[in-house]
Length: 219
Image 1 (cartoon, rainbow, N blue to C red):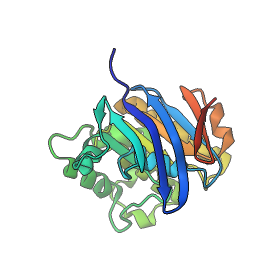
Image 2: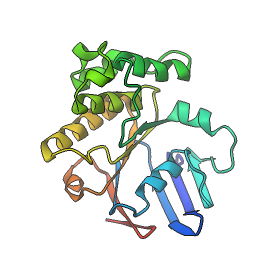
Image 3: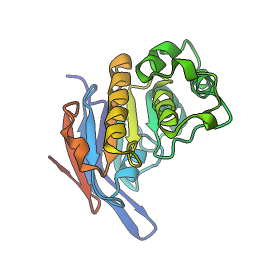
Image 4: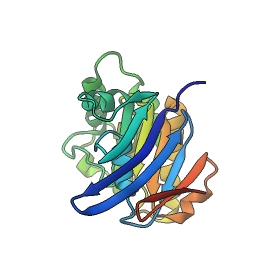
């Protein structure tokens, strides 16, 4: 039996005297899309940052495909080759085009690109916007570029932090459609954090977990 793609064992984290996560354990199989829900300030973003090796936990262990990440010195290389991120504020290079934003990630990874630009952008309807500076795109278009960039390095795991937070229900649903279309095209596992309870109704989620006051519960 293969190891889980991602495993958190007894993970706790604090910022100074403020305890954000308390003994969180979570196991995610490859291809198992997970929705993490909870109110603002509950620890969802901290949990994603630890899962994506952007942040070392104060206590506990993080494993990726059975290999221990906690305490390793090459976490930047791990992120570059195995993890994609969708940030709430996008963090795109606004003066560059969608093509250039994706190519930066693809070139940084090195080797043969895991997926063609066509494969990444076709599910998003952005083929005619490839060479326009990002600052001239609508917010919805910029969001789609951010989604595509998260998959540009051929990650096995994509972590999305509140990607629908500022969207109306129609655009939120469309964003999830794009996210899962990219996942299907690339084979990546998706873990998304959101405070929007309406997103739980999507059939794509294998599991839904809830974070509140630093503790994790399933269901």
